[in-house]
Length: 125
Image 1 (cartoon, rainbow, N blue to C red):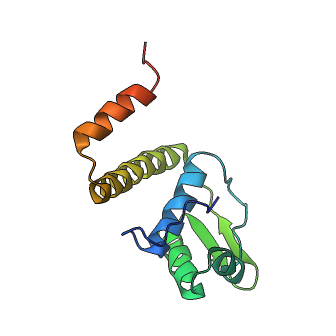
Image 2: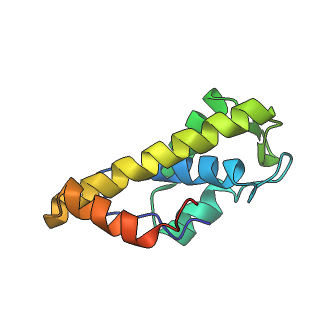
């Protein structure tokens, strides 16, 4: 689930972790009640400071996406269907924003991206 965390990205690591959890929830990859990896386990896996993971989890808790239970772990909260749809749309917007930033860094123009997307997306007929 966290294989897309990129330390070279201009997006802070904690935000990338938080965004990835949000996307996993919105897509149904994670369900209410499921637990997230412990702070220490995720920090070790991603090779980041545990404080980075704590910050991501706290942001998710502040937005009522997860529930942190002392001594038990971090769990996905129950979420209304409308909230899940909003999270899915927000995740898509974050993804597009990141794609645009990466494209700009590599010298690709929005027109280049639009052409590539038109070629890759299935026809909407």
